Amino acid sequence: MLYLLPAFIFGTALGSFINMAVYRLNKNQGFGGRSYCDYCKKTLSTTALIPFFSYFLLKGKSNCCNKKLSKECVFVEFMSGIFIFVISLYFLGYLNSFGVVPFYSFNKSILIGYFLFYSSIFVILATIFIYDLKFMVVPMFFVYWGYALVAAFKIVEYFLYRTYLVNSLSSTTLGKYILQTDYLNNRLNFFIQDNMWSLLVASGIALFFIFLVFITKGKGMGVGDIFVAPLLSFLLPYPNAVLYVFLSFIIGGIFGSFLLLFTKAGRKTAVPFVPFLIIGYLFALIFGDAIISLLV
Image (cartoon, rainbow, N blue to C red; front, side, top):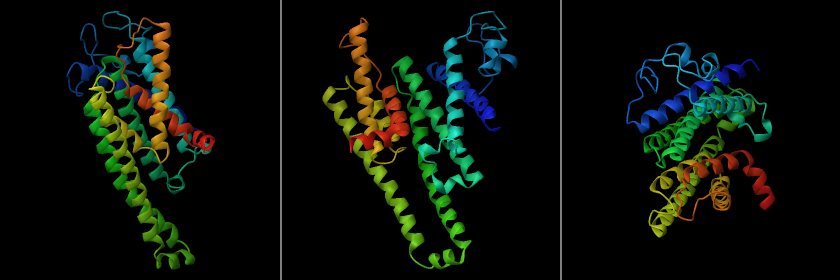
């Protein structure tokens, strides 16, 4: 449990980075250099750089020009802290009902690697989510980084899985005998086939969104959706990788109906779809198995 408070603080720091990334991407600025006040452009003090907690330390106002600080940024930092806190619960085994993957749950180094990978994925998805929601544009820079991260992770995961199998089997007499059979190659081939199947599903989803963009002439779907949708599907096992797309359309349809009924929005009102893809992905990640069991 001692890991959980640092995990929340680490999450708020990631939230601070997300806020900075969204702001600087929109301004076409790099990510290097010290943060500065949005109003007077002065470099922020050390106190002002403390994620989430600085808002309360400074009483909701900047200490350089006494302007009101953004509550939206504080909310993003807080929710980031909560999200990383939940991820920590999962990887520490407190959420076993979601199914901790056995091969990395017994090795602390591998466990930390998985934690950092999913924390990085969270930063990428959260930045894409907020940026598209605010500016109706998908930040392709982070999408490309998402693909690069997933590709590198899958390669590393293969070797980690192989090392785990060899080490675990070598520790027993029976295991040493099994290593002389085709068991190891069969397990590794299954691992590769599983990932190839995920790649095939992701390609199919990409083609589906290309078709939607074509028939709507870019008005119903944007080009960014074509790139984000398969990235998310590759992060889910089949059939959750397909389920999340249907959930995205259902959630988007409910939200669109709400806008039509209770706001001044019309049928031609533009609504970014990537946030619904990410929400659908989270639903499929957490509740996917339960939903599929109800449908089958």
